[in-house]
Image (tube, rainbow, N blue to C red; front, side):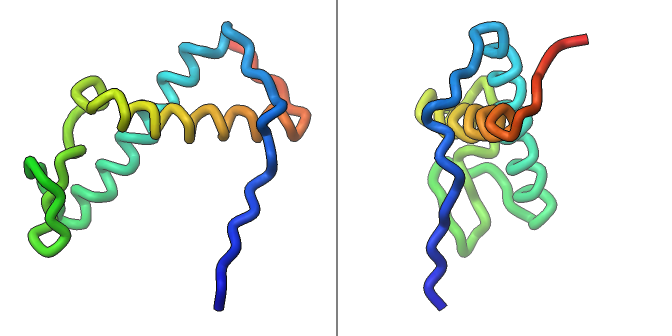
Length: 94
């Protein structure tokens, strides 16, 4: 089987600057969810990724990640928010 991902194109969906804090909070939660899953599978921190030993250098708090890793999580958060907006939903703070 050849899997061909086809995410919805949300490139034209703008995220209002008022949602920047939400993007960052969601990005941190994305990282924490990933990290919790890894820890639950027996992974621990290691300075280099080692799949056999279940070591990963990104098993640190979000604030301690390299900027490139935080950008990865931000991109996931942004795409999620853009998807929600593209489906006609509004995001507003109570």
